[in-house]
Image 1: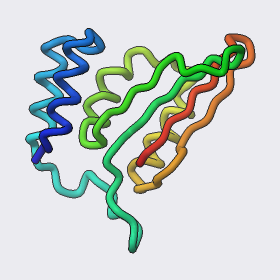
Image 2: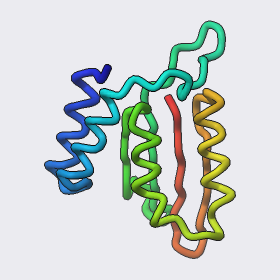
Image 3: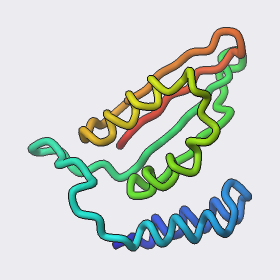
Length: 126
């Protein structure tokens, strides 16, 4: 079952125009679906991850260009919606991130620096 915080995050993304109302409805439905076996068992003593965070930093200014926080329960739905934007040659990195999430890894799961564009992309599971 979705928490109020997760539902409010989705509504905020709709309000800010980050996702469409239709996509928001899909995300809310996905939160309500109870799919046993899809989430990894957390390590002993560790809490279950709750957030998928993406941060894009401008290397020249040292400032965050993008900071997105998504409830972990929505990652699979979000990945399916965003998969159409992933170029074929970047598929290895995508699979690496998905495997880390499925394995229950926490902390930084992806770190990429694009010197040409002056950007650093970091993905965290917390």
